[in-house]
Image (cartoon, rainbow, N blue to C red; front, side, top):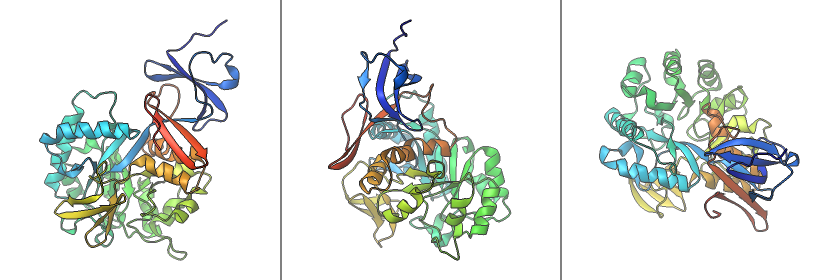
Length: 389
């Protein structure tokens, strides 16, 4: 009996998490079926992907702004600019993101959260990246590891200050980065866990023991591993050492070649559970999508050169490279197979915040990845767009 033909189908596709080639059937904008290619007799209709990889779009759990707008500076007048950012990120292969609010005055946090809440109440277009909540990176950070976060706005971590910072917007916060040693009783972590907020440890001087205690209290993420935390030392493994060996802990990584040396990335990528333990973030700042140059950053300035952003004193403050550039870097540096690099920006961030990955029923916001050995390049395209390398 002939099979019913779907609206769209792709065949000879490699899929993340699956072995062999598959045929992907799309109906009404969602994946309707995944069929091993050997089980399908006809490929007359559809697009032959010739062994290329298919993935969902990227998910960026830490991005500070784009197109010249820093998310902590959002006002109601910026709603059209926020719309443009969502459209821009979609064009950069991003399905969803968490606007990240770095340490600033509480009133600024509340104003930005109110704007995002208003934005989410508006109709959302299909060709734009979706906002899956907010990432609060601060203000509960260790001053000794604050990095580029302004010290005058750091706050002590107590239930009272935590409730003040969240205000009436706790339901908008998906991830909060904090230094667990600031509040050793675990009450703040328990409170956040009760609210359903994912706790990420970062900008911290926590020892391995302190980090393990925080993980036992519900924290399960690490913010930009290696950066703004004690070094991974053989006698003092610190926060990162604990995170790498505690079950159920996922660590964000910035793969721009500046925040973490490729050799250290290679060390982590050897883990057999790499897709559960690691995920890529961009940590991109407001000049994402703009040319290199000098840009305002709160009351200071950042200097952007070849995609790396630093304060005037040389302090590394972030990058202006998009998330999927990290995928391409991992392949260019020969650190892992393309399917692992792709998954670290598409599947792993979803797992980190308990969102479903590629499978039947998932939105058909698919990226096609094509790789070549000579010259060694990994390009991607939304299936309606041109190849991006």
